[in-house]
Length: 323
Image 1 (tube, rainbow, N blue to C red):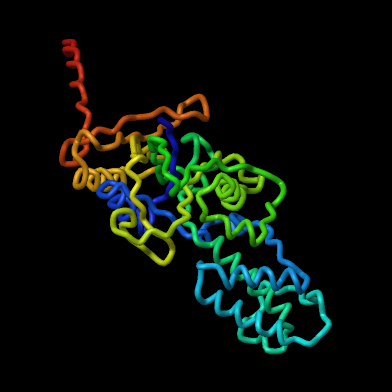
Image 2 (image 1 turned 135 degrees about the horizontal axis):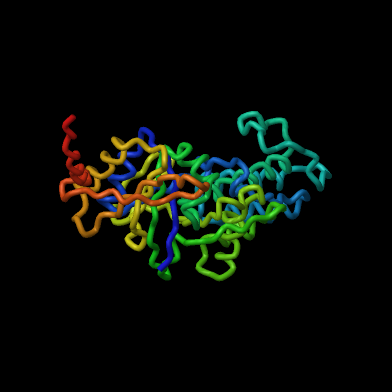
C-alpha cells in the first residue's frame, strides 16, 4: 500500500468533488490545458524543416487513425506539395505556433505543412487527463498555495497499485531541460509497449526544478473514457474517473479551516458512506513552541453530527470561611 495526498481549498465545486469521491470513488482528472503551470506537459516539438521530411510526416498523419480532420488536411497539403513547382526545399516560415489557419492562402505549402504537424502533435499531447497528488501531507508551500493558507484540507489516499495501463501512476522527474519529442514518438503514445511508457513519462511527468518541493506524483489517463463504468461525469475542463484502488483514508483540515465547513463534509460522507468506510477527520493545531502541528481527531456519529467532547465537571468550590 502507498499513501498519497491531495491538497485543496474550499470552492464552488468542493461539494461536487466530495459527492463524486464518496458516492462513486471518482476523482477529478482535469485536461492538460487546465493545469496551473503553462509549461507543464509542453515538451519541445521537433518539427521537420525540409520538403522530404515534411512530406513524410504529413503522410504519417494522413495514414493515422487519430483524427479524420487532420488526415484530410494532411492529404490536401500533400497534393499541394506534389503540384508545387517551386525549388524551395526548406521552410523559411517562423513563428508558426500562432499562425491563423484561416489566413494561410499566401503561406507556402511547406510552412502550412509544418503548422499542421505542430497542431497535430499538440492535439495528441493534449488528450490526457491528469490527477496530481503529493507524497507528503506536511509541506508548508502546498498548504499555502493549494489549501487556502490552511483554510482548506488535504485528503490522504491509500493506493493499492495494480497493473492497469490506464490511468498510469507516475512520479514526476524534476529537470532543467525540456524534453524533445518527435512526431514518431507522439504516434507511439497509444501503443502498449515499454517505449510508449517511456514517452508517456517524458511528455507528462517532467517539470521544472522550481516545482521540486511539491513531491508530486500523478495519475495520467491517456484514454478519454466515455463509458459509465469509468467516466462518471464529463465536464469541459475534465472528467471524473472511477478508481476503486485509490480510497480516502483521512481528511486533514488546515489549522485555519472553519468548523462549519468540516461539518458539511462530514454530512456528505454520512449520506454516501457506511460508518466503517468513512475516512477519519483530523484538524491540525499548531504547537506552541514550534512550526509543527498536532493532529486533533474529530469524531462524528452515524448521521454526521459532530460529537462534542464532554467537559468534566468543575471541582466544587471550597466552603466560605466565616469571619
